[in-house]
Figure 1: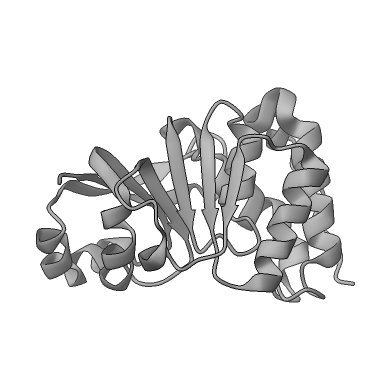
Figure 2: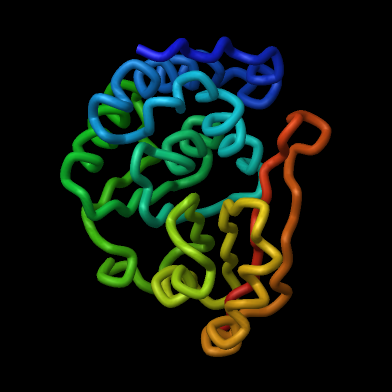
Length: 208
């Protein structure tokens, strides 16, 4: 197995009293993730900085009931559920082997604030019921909006983890942004005082 990245000192600061649960999940993902088709072969060597902390640093942005579309290995959904036990998380994932992993981790980690739904985002029955939707590494914004924005209740928010191309994705999605009545669409950098590579999110308010 690829060498697993050591836990950065800042992890305990980000997770606080939830750090032990975060360590358990990270160890499980590093050990089983490649074999189960959840992460690539190079990812264990950067598991904390690239995946766990990049997801966790966004935790203060959320409240209420949140859907993670295309949850996959649980990035960011399981990580956020660990960091924010006061928030209700709905992890939406269409692939059976990934939902099996999510269920296993929910049970092993004792995450009572997690609901797992095997579905595509656009087919989920809870449309219009959540306070926010998040997604990470799913697809370009113009493709993502049609199956994320409709899930959010009026006045809710999209908080989407993105890469360096985020500003260009907003420009390319102008038509979809208008169609889904989004406002205050912007890119924010989260965790600049904590991480060498802070998280980049696209945030937008959703109006019915």
